[in-house]
Image: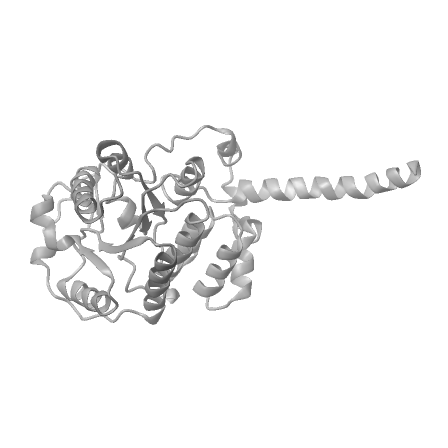
Length: 314
């Protein structure tokens, strides 16, 4: 028996050491998108189960527009921004599935800046932003397969960080390791406050019409899937468009028509720029994102919209 124990230890100890080193390297090489998706995933985990009344989903235009901390503290609307920069709607769909494992929001609001993007527009940084912080799960695997058009190699690589991020060996620092042992502040609830001001000469209500785009089939399927998930969970769903200067009336008309045809709620914030008080000379970080002053105005507008539309969130 003693001999068997010694033999077992000789076999198990190296395997255990390998596993510890392998897992440690995975976490060390994993990109940390602080202020972006990494922070949002960690912050969501810090919240108590079923503590969110309104969940916001989408790309960076969402979490630069909606100050979830302000909604929670100033308007008593328990909210959270859960998304990733450059995120396509297919990924947003799976972020919703992951969030519903611990949360049961009364309202979900999905920002549609990515509605005209195709899966082929996904880049390495897009994958990294959306999937690096996402723990391995069936949802992550299915999402990677869907976004990569069934490419199992891509799904495997982004499911095992060391396979895809090994090239970071020359930029990995002590901070990549100590990150997991530091105390982080998640009080912003996913909101990213940007103070820089870019003065814009073109605002939506003076924008050229531009070309008429067609919503890609992938985005159509993602929108309908999100709607079905919300119906199954008795969640009110609102799609919305954040104020941005590169969004045209034609873009808005195409989206409005599609959502109306499918009986889905849509808040086109660019139709209310005067009411919101958006000023192109002070409220933008760049042509695609609001800064902190613009976000404060937009958040107050969204708070008013939510309180008028839903009587069970505050």
